[in-house]
Image (cartoon, rainbow over all chains, first blue to last red; front, side):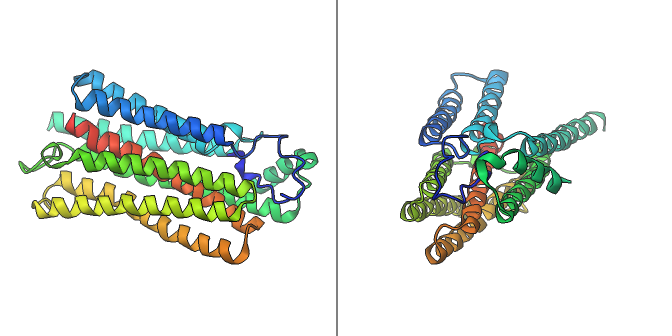
Length: 116
Length: 208
């Protein structure tokens, strides 16, 4: 998210290329096209029953997670963040908490259903 | 602590930036917003967990796969995805110093967001008309809570975006409005990411 280095001195313009802080048209277009593809794949394959069952579930989650990564890299510029990578660290902490909540809830509650 | 470190970072880049206190403050605010987004992730995480746990509990009533009309949902998905892209184009216009382009792309983004909300409300009205409300079953309670929390976020984003467009019109591109555009951009991308998971978990897993 190195776009957070706004070129508040836009008139200087000298350091525009020194670090690709705010993405380029190219990166946005690539991100958009990848997102479109990653949305179309599950729709075509799952809704037409080309893949079913576990394979369909795996396909759905893999494309969703890939699209999450695409948005982070191409739209939110996470990859371009400068050195102390606080944004990445807080994101990883947050994702860890989310995973514990989601996986833990499902685990415990499904276990309840089995044993009751 | 973050403050100190941010300063350290800014000093490391001093050659590039020629920073001033104002710049540091604005980038710190952007960082603060990022942390808010992470906590918002946790909010949605709990709602997704609730939905996942309750997804079988339809109380012998209608299930999602019987009720969803995927054409509208797929349209919503592509509309939000495109608006995420156009909010990026707004940012690019801003970095070029193009105020008209910036406001124009923000307007396109907001219009797409409004289409999304319109389609979502249409879906809810249709569902309620068919007799499926938030009190129908645990499944539908979880469904409406999760999907409408996302919808409310988008609605807030819409008004917020309009406010920023007005501020841009009045003050032009300043370090402060620049930071605000960055913040709304992050917020908008974040909502698109959440929608991807709503689309996958709530809709696609249900109708497959």
